[in-house]
Length: 250
Image (cartoon, rainbow, N blue to C red):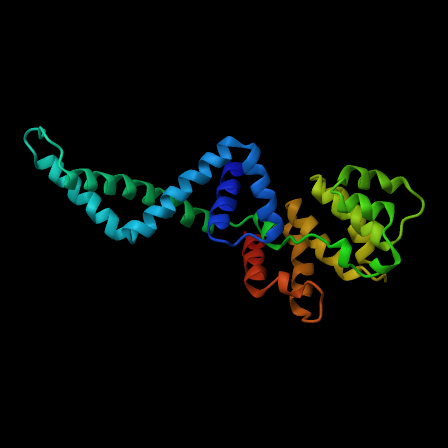
């Protein structure tokens, strides 16, 4: 059930144009291979079209109620269905879709979880424009760019790993949905002086969120939010911090 709600939230944000580019690309790839997900998107698109065509939920619902009252008052079915009645019936169907759409939107907006916050804040590390890229790419960097995350993870056995490689290994653990392992790598990197310390702090906070450890993520999120010079300051705005605080208070 939680996975369905998460997918519906992604679809709604996709229709609203709110998804970051990486998430948008990932969702569009899923839509190409998941017919059920495509069907849910189509249903939401129909509901969105109902909003555009028939105005606010209150207006459409009023028409729906009027039609139901009229139907109750009729003693016998009409022999001919007029275009006007057909249109009103269409409006009633649109009203039902619209009410469901708005209900889902309101419900989803009220559901805050560490996973949802992770999705909101995540932005992938760009190897091609990262610090030190001019010196050439390592095997780990090349594998990460090719999205061969399992291969990157296996590189942890190598004895020649620099700070950037460690960061990419931690990120690859996130990509293969192993946040606990990501925490171990990123915590060490965030606790030592190195060129990628701020990157590690950001992704460590995300790793805590992905592993449902909101209370451990909160100090890092607050630290990054409070430092306007931090590389990822804008990813954790005041609204994000407030949502996480409320979540961890529960």
